[in-house]
Length: 612
Image (cartoon, rainbow, N blue to C red; front, side, top):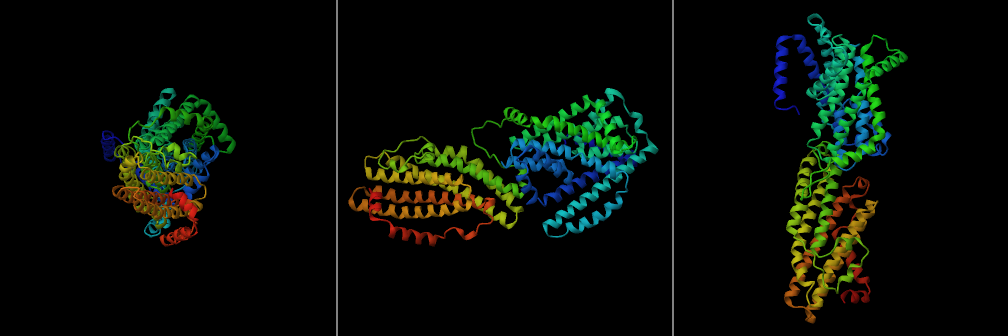
C-alpha cells in the first residue's frame, strides 16, 4: 500500500541506516521480524476461518455490547486488529453483518489492541523472550509441514508467536545499544510543539509499518531503553492510533461501499479519540498516575504507565462514540453512496470474502439470489406479465381468455444491463473460491454455479418464447390465444411459488415443495400435448399454430425446469440443509410415477374444465 514514490525513499533510508550503524540494523531487523510474525499469526488464524470464528460472529453481534465484546476478545486473541477488520469487512460485504454491528466490532478491536501494550510492557521487556522464541519456531515449523489444515494453522500461530518474541528481543537489544552510541533523549521536545510533532511521527511510523501494534511495541521498547521521554512516548502512542486509520482507508479503497463506510467509521473514531486525548492529555496523565498508584505500578515504570494511558484513552473513545453508532451509521450511509451506474453490479462479492470459505459461500448465495431477482423481472415481462400481478393474489388463470397485455422490453438490452456483469462476477468468484474449500462446501458452491447457469438459460428460453407470445396472445383465434396465455399463467404461477418458498423459514419443507411443483409441471406438460392434439383433430388451429405450440411448449418446459433447478441449488447451499438427507428429493422416475398416479386419480370433470 506504500506509494511508488515513498517506497524508494524508505528503502534508501534503510540502506543508509544499515551502512552507518549496526545498532540500527538490530532495531530494523527486530521490526521486520515482528511484522513477519504478525503475518504468520494471521495466516494461522485464517486456517480456522472455516468454522468457529464465523459461527461465533453470526450469533455475537445482534447487540451493540456483543459487537464491542467480540472486537475486544478476537483482537486480544489474535493480536491483529487488521485481521479482525478484514473479517468484518468481508461479512458486511456478504450481507451477513450490518454496518452498525461492524462499527461496534471495530470500536472493540481498538480497545482489544491495547492488550498488546500490556503484554510487551509487563512481560516482554522483563524476560529474555528469545529463550521462548526458539522452541516456538521449531515446533511451529514441524506443525506447518503437516498436511491437516488445523495442524498447519497451529504451526503458523506458533511460528508467528516465535517471530513476535524474537522481534521484540532484537528491538530491545537495539535500543539498549543506542545508549553507548547516541542518546536520543537529547532530541526530546517539550510542550505543545513536542506533543504535536511526536504525534505526527507516530502517525508516519504506523503508515510505513502498516501496523499500529508494531509501532506501539517499538515505542515501548524505546521507552524501556530510555531512548525517548515518557511525554514524547504518549504523543507517539496517540499518533500510532490515528495512523492506523490511514492503512484502513487505503485497504478499503477497493472494497464495496459498505467497506468504505466501515473505514470511514474507523477514521472518525480514531481521529476523534486522538483529538480528545491531545486536548485532555494533562488530565489523562493525572488519571494514569492515580490508576497506576491504585494498582501498584511503580511511579518510575513508564512502560506500564504507557500501557495504562493507551488503554485509558481508547476506553474513553469507546465510551464517547458507542452511543453514536446508529447516528454514525446513518451519516455514513447518507454521505458515502455507491456509484450511480446504469448497469446493475455485484453487491455481495469482495476480495475479502475469498479468504474465508464460510463467508464466500453465503456471499455467492446472496449474489445468486440478486441475479434471480433481476431475472424474475426479465422473465415476467418477457411473457407480458407484471411483477406486481405475480406477487399479488390475482388468479393468473383468469388471463386465459383475455387478449394478452403488451409490455415493452428489450431482453437483450436488459440482459446486458441487469444480468451479464453479475453472472460473470459470480462465475469468476466461484472459480476462485471453490479451489480452497473442503468437499462439502465445494459441492454447495457447484450447486450455486449451476443455479447461475440455470438463470441465464431460463432468460434465453424466454427470449425465444417471447416472439410467439407477442404474436398469439393478441390473435383473434381464441384457442391459440388461450394456450399461449396458459403458458404465461404457468410461468407466472411458478415465479410466484418460488418467491413464497424463498421467504420460507424451513428449507427442508421448501425442498419437498419443489418436488410437488416438479410433479405438477410434468403433469401439465403432458396435458398440454393432449390439448394440442385435440385442437389439431378438431381443426381449431392451423398446422403452423400447432407447430409453434409444440416448439414453444419445449421452451416453457425449459424455463420452468431451469427455475426449479436454480431454486434447488439455492436451497441446497443453505447452512440449515447440512442435516437434511441428500436423497430427500424425488428422482425423475419417481416424478413420472406420481404423474401417472395423478392422471389416473384426476376426475374427468377436472380434465374437461382445464381443457375449456
